[in-house]
Image (cartoon, rainbow over all chains, first blue to last red; front, side, top):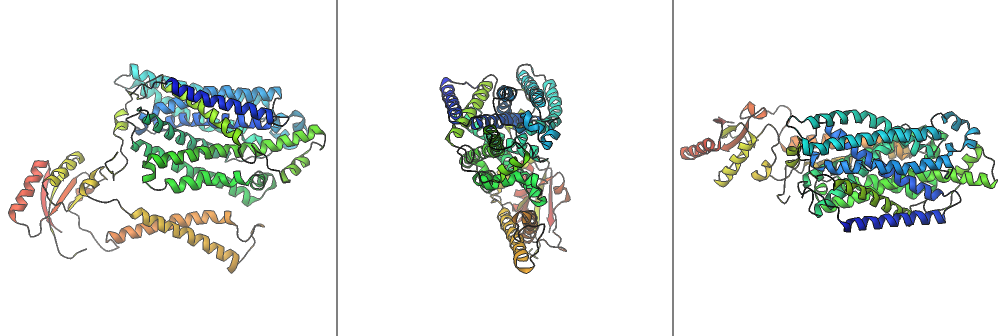
Amino acid sequence: MNQFTFDSRLKTFLIGFMVLGLVCLGLTFAVDDDLHTRFWTNYLHNTVFFTGIALMSLFTIAAFTTAWGGWFVLVKRVWEAFSLFLVPGLVLMLLVIVGIWGHFHHLYHWADAEAVAADPVLLGKSSFLNPGWYTFGTLIIVGLWIFFAFKLRQLSVDEDANGTPDFEHHKKIRIWSAAFLPLAGFSSAAVIWQWVMSIDAHWYSTLFAWYTGASWFVSAMALTILTVIYMKSRGYLEHVTIEHLHDIGKYMFAFSIFWAYLWFSQFMLIWYANVGEETVYFLERRENYPVLFYGNLILNFVAPFFILMRNDTKRKYGTLVFTSVVVLFGHWWDFFQMIKPGARATAMEALAHHAGEHGHDAAAHGEMLSTQLPFAMGFTIPGLLELGTGLGFLALFMYVAFDRMSKASLVPKKDPYLAESLQHHVEIHEEGAH
Amino acid sequence: MSNQNKDVLYGLYDDEQVLLKAVDKANAGHLEIMDVFTPFPVHGLDPKLGLEESRLHIAGFVFGALGTLTAFLFMTWVFTRDWPIIFGGKPYWSVPAFIPITFELTVLFASVGMVVTFYTICGMAPGITNPTLDDRITDDKFCIAFDVTGAEEAQKDKLKGFFTASGASEVNMKTI
């Protein structure tokens, strides 16, 4: 079946989870501290995570097209649908922006004008870390991604109906894809500095953008595998075989190792140099958030590395689905541990400041970080409310994706590489079952 | 490598699809193929020839794990027992500092170990030359070879007939 029907049963199912997500967000808001830190961090965490998956899906299409790849053509419509989540992603980010201007939240230390004035480090960064740049950067950059996502989608769908024998559409897709790659590389770094890295406003790492990019990419591959297997179980995407899934599984495996490499490169240089203003980031996480810190490595490196190392685990639905769920959750966990400790410290400092207990200076900030923090559900580990919110966002993401998939043929009928994708074969030792 | 020379009757094909069909035909006619030579791995050929999957990667894993252990245990011994030195105020047993070297030795052991294993299995070593049937099988020809040592003329004629019928572009005899 080439035409996906987004039936009402699936819609109801996804809407149910979205309602669950909303209820969880509401409950979080109700049980929160005065600054609603848990609510806002959960909101930002999921928004950034799923917008990143949409960006990486677009990046994947662009990269594979530029590399003259043909095998992925049958999966292309899934990635196109994923990439269109950038639109809701930007809308969701707008609420964070409104929150900054309206002082509804205290996620970013640099957004507090009073704190910046008294802090030479923040003052030095204030030409980039300020509400104006945050707003402008988010709008322009995500807007640019949306433009490219629409352009590639529109050309690809139009090719189905009006494709010509000299592949005019494909030539245009190739040009737009090649133009998108460097843009995506630099712009994703700029937004991730603003969205996530600036939560620990004093701290910085030049590897951070690569590390989060790898995290997003692995998540995008895991979600692709889960979606494709679901679609196949419903009788769609029948031409996508285990050969295609094997290749996507290889990407998941390879980029899990790449992620671990970047994680360790970032960690080791900071550990080795032992400069206080850099080590504070890891010290905070290792001492106060050990479950997040070590769990991150187990979920995102140890598990996929040992499970997917064998050839046959990438060719079986059971192991593929299991690993995809683990790493999708794992990278969600990874973003959780990037966001929560810094935002919590910022909020604690602000609350203490409002209560008039501490003077607002850099020394108080340092003191706050070095003290042993008590266990706090939703910060030390993700609680049930975080899981519910995450599932709600996932349901929203999948709702948008399924809706987009139902709007076009699942097979790009006139793509010049369609025949190559249909015959895609990676395994020499075939067992005949597939 | 056995010292006894073999008489080999072989046919050359121009295309891998023709070759695959020829192998099917040979299997159907119960002709015992000695070996098939191709310039690149042809998908679907191995099962037709009844070849099992290589176990070289298991050796690779074992060598790799050996490299991991060697590097890690050696550094542990050096820096905690043999010659403890404080570097940059770090503890003697500084695991993060060991990781890059452990990684490098894992890769080194796995790759060198696999090469040596592969050469040993294939009977290759410096100074040993392996005879080739035809140099073009490393370029653009696909070859099916039959061992016809001591075979009767009738058998050879049957094989020649098979080559002609299955689309071989050339049929040759060679003693290797």
